[in-house]
Image (cartoon, one colour):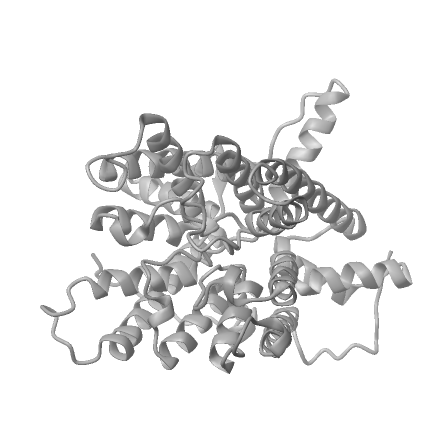
Length: 457
């Protein structure tokens, strides 16, 4: 049931509320992580606590201190809570619990959830949120159970359960936080752990709209009906599968004589697939990134830039954006007027939004890369810092895509560098479109200027 709430202030738009909610979450997380109960030994500095809280709330996974050895159980639970709340969205959670208390939604609540998860009208908000929460809990419990079974073989029972829950939530929310000092390098050959994590990452990265569409599809199939998937779901699934295969093959080819040269064939395949899946969204690693080739690093920059799917826990420009962009370029090369995908014509508004998101993302990455080069490399000559450009670009795209992978420079960032990367994680989690709407809004000019033809290209 929807009702208007005249007491709500309309000065702030849903996008503003969304941004403020994440800011509040990060602030609370920073305070909690600075408490003496949160760390083993010395307290975290305010910048390190802020960086960690931002990384967890924005489900990124970049760390300036080792999670498993620096934080106490209390500190780790704070990080886990930030991951779960940040993954689902604090406004999604608060709206759901308000519904449980008062039994109804306002139109403003619906606008907020729409901006957070779908950017489309929602017919039944209560059912939508119920499916999201039940599905999230179910998937995370299954993942935790499977991982715990494996960890029990090498850990005490209670520790195995805790590690299973922590890494299941971290994987599903595409956060990439790990309690192991080397992430999952020790388990690079473990089929059960690798494929469980990959399944959690992929499911969490598909997005809630795809999950609902697939749920409806299989429910209808059980009743003997022949439903069809939406074009959006088809684009997401096809692009996700293509990128996983492309990334796996690329990694295998580029590292066959380098990082995975001494691995058995089975381990090579598992590592290649695992890194292809986790690089776009999650940030776990089963191989030391410091030893990867430049070609692999740049391949991963591309994958991180594309990222996960809209409405998911992952960042990047999103798989649907990339798919539509490719279709647009193909149409232009063929001199076609319409942009088509799965026998459907894509509207000009969607194409314009796709190009805008991509361009805005490139501009943000370029600016932050330039500023970080100034703050971290300074006036050191190019000859003396040849590898720094690629490493900083990798760090920037990883933060913007809320991936969390690093070549090892995160902990060595300057004060300014940590603040800049924190800002990037915040921008990446909210998304370029949300920020653009918050700054510029949707207002249209009441007039149009005369059209002019210009020479381009």
